[in-house]
Image 1 (cartoon, rainbow, N blue to C red):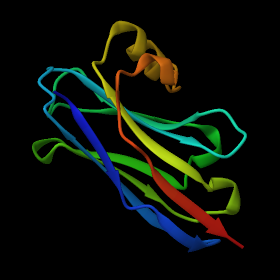
Image 2: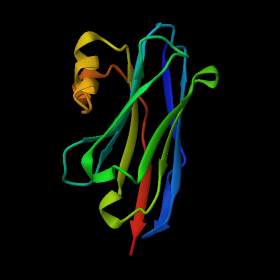
Image 3: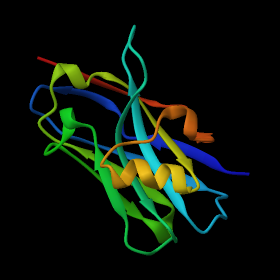
Image 4: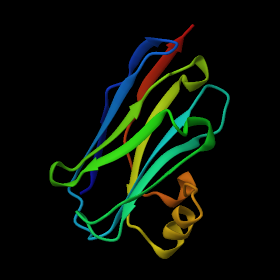
Length: 137
């Protein structure tokens, strides 16, 4: 059974930084794609960043939504089953519940990444409960 657990959220001032962590256990597929999504009150869930590889431990491909490019970095520590989202220069618009989602890197999801985009939330099977990020000015 695949389990996804996020941690690292909190409250910071504008311009501050946070690191979100996503621990994935029980995952036995050879390929993967993991994405961070966020959802603010009254807004739709938005893909923020994704990282994928055709084989665990091989070279990865990352993609970001335009609003976080240059500020957020997604990375993977495959042996530990960990995915990180390093967030810098945070602003109040980044305030949201952040979710980690994982699934196999299918041809469809790979095409999203090849275009520099993030697959939609509906394409991901395994989800965590979320971690809250609040940025105040």
